[in-house]
Image (cartoon, rainbow, N blue to C red; front, side, top):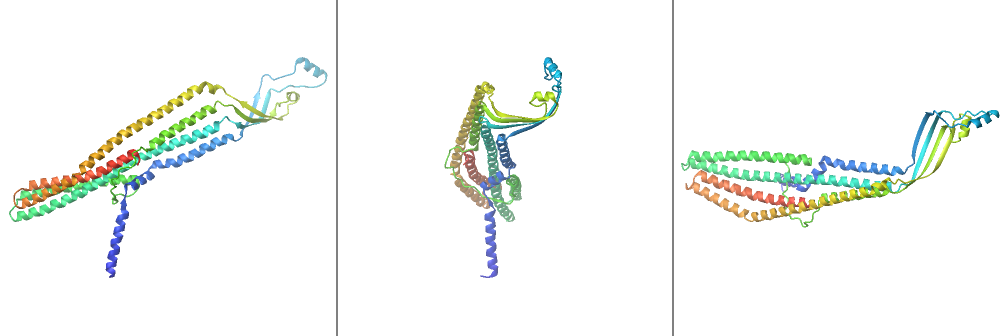
Length: 429
């Protein structure tokens, strides 16, 4: 084998490999669109926010420290009875009493021992709330699939129309050459040639319009996927019906997440009814101290501290317990109603789409036969034209009929596949 032949064969394999790898599937487009969609960034933001909120809730168990300072002036302060003051004066003991100007720098410390389940309820509510937000994002991202698939099939339809238009244009150009030859032989008139040529130009205009539509669809697909789709070869999906007709939409996960979030709020209501137990300590340096007698004798600052165990139980939560539980019950019933409505509408849509698929399947059974018959009629018309039986107008009519039959056949096939994918989207299959 010569070097030139080897180079030629290698070149052919490289071209074939490039074409095969250049094919883009509809699943790949959907995956790229969901990865490229700006909403995806919110997943990381939600994850970070959840970590921060859970960290803050856990820190509620850390000792709480408050540092304070104050200076006050009182118009009245505790003092000795007048009789006792006279006795102290006779004894030569000077008692100035508490000063009206008082000041201190203090520190308050509290350490929860049992919060009645508040922190646990808050953690459960935070996790349930973030699960609900994730489900909302998943539902919004899922809607991208329908838009991308619709654009993808729009490209396939436009490309198929381009192929059929190009084939019809080649057929018209072939007949134009035949008509020119017939005119040269005196068996056709110039008006016949002009009629076919005008039809060629109109078909060329149609080709330009369809190519523009294809470019627009490809541009949209490129914006969603983040890829250059202008020269990409899109792979026609297989017409495979979903094996399982059960609904598996992310909206159902959203309803479940909303229910869980609602139940988590119920735990918060119960924890609010429980007593709270904690340690506390208070210390300050200032005047007056806890020893009032000593502070009456002099105005020196002193260090003072008190510590103990504190039990608190607010009964105000009992007043609202019944109403709060009723609100949660109503919220749960609303979620259940929304879920039932969604499933009902989805079942209706599924039945409609299944009927459309069956309709297209029946229509497609005769497409190939119609195309074959239209082609036979067109070929017969070409022969009749050469024999002078019909004119150019009749031939153009037959060519147009064949073109419409081929377009309809191609459209039915793509619409059939698109209807299957719409059903898969409705079911999330």
